[in-house]
Image (cartoon, rainbow, N blue to C red; front, side, top):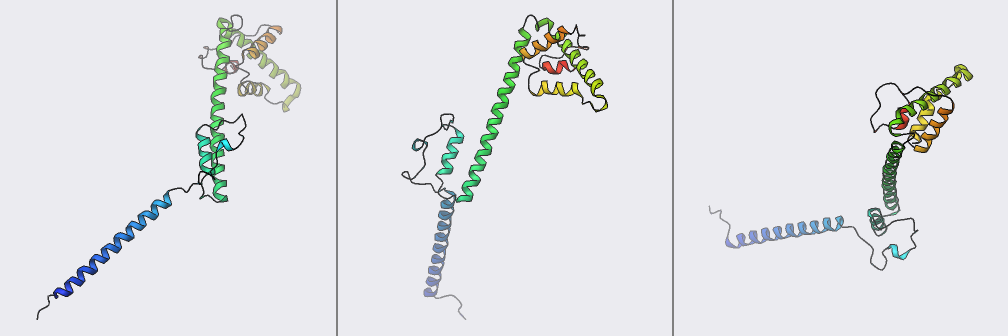
Length: 212
C-alpha cells in the first residue's frame, strides 16, 4: 500500500507550516515591541512638560545638579499616579537629606580640624605649652566634679563625664578660644598638674586630652 503523501497534500502541509512560522514570528515581534514600549517611560510633551524656568525657584536652592534633574524626571513622568508621585518624591527627599547630612558632616570635620590647627599655632597657650595647659583644664574639671559630688551627695551626676562629653560633642573642646578661656580660668584657681602619660597624637581632640 502506497503511504507517500500526494504532491497536493505535501504542498498543503508546506503552506500550513509556513503560515505557522509566520504567525509565530509575528507574535514574537509584537511581544518584543510591547516589552520595549513598557520599558520606555512615557513623558509629557514639550508644551506640557515641567521646567524650572517656568516657575520661580528660591535663590537658596540649587537645581542645576543631579537631584534637580531627578526632580524634573519625576514631574514629567506621565505614567506616575498619585501614589507613584508620592513615593518618588519621598525617595528623592530622603536622598537629598542624606546628601545634606554628609556635606554637613564633612564641613564639621573640616571646621574642627582647623580649630585644632589654630590652637596648636598659638604661641602662648598652644605649641610647646599645649600639654601643660590642657593638664590644668583637666585638673579643674576633676576638681569641679569632686565639688559637685560633695555638694549633692549620692544623687550627684557624673559631672566630669557630662562636661567632657559636652566639650567633645559640641566641638568646644577643640575651639581655640574656648580652650584659652578654660586655661585662663584654671590659672586663676592655681596651677594644675600636667596630664600624665605619653602625649596623644596630633589627631586627638583637645577635649580628649583633657579627659586624661
